[in-house]
Every structure is written in C-alpha cells, then in structure tokens.
Amino acid sequence: MLMAVESETEGENCVLLVNFNISRPDNAISPHQTAVTPSLVCQVIDGALAAGWKPKDKAPNFKFNYGLIRDCPYAD
Image (tube, rainbow, N blue to C red):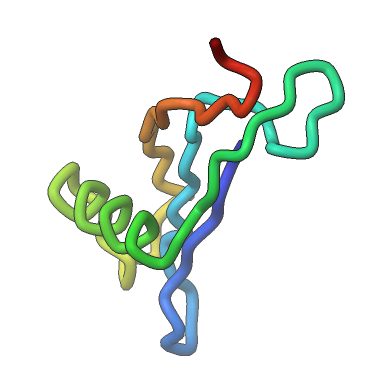
C-alpha cells in the first residue's frame, strides 16, 4: 500500500511517496484491517522530515519506507 503526500503551497514541490510494506486492505487474497489514520499520517510526515524530505524543494519524489504491522482479523 502506497501513500502520496505533497505540500499545499503552489509551485513545484517534492512529493513524498510512502511505502507501508503491506498490501491494500481490500486485497482479496490476504485481507486485513490496517487503517491509515490522521495520527499515522503525522507520524509518517515527521519520520520523512527527519529522514531528509524537504517538501518545498523542486526535487524528484522522495521515497520513504514506513513498515506497518498488519492487523489481521483472522489471527488466532
């Protein structure tokens, strides 16, 4: 599952591309209930900023891995 984040300011900005390292929740082969909440988005942005993402730079996309623990409703 991927998420894209970009600055709301006008002009060319560096887009943050986040890889959560899990499949989408609607995946029929391996379903799960992991949610991307506003709090999680804040954590991801803070982590990407600490890793060097500069949202207002005119740079290529910034790729950032943020592995989530998959919530599985079918676990024993």
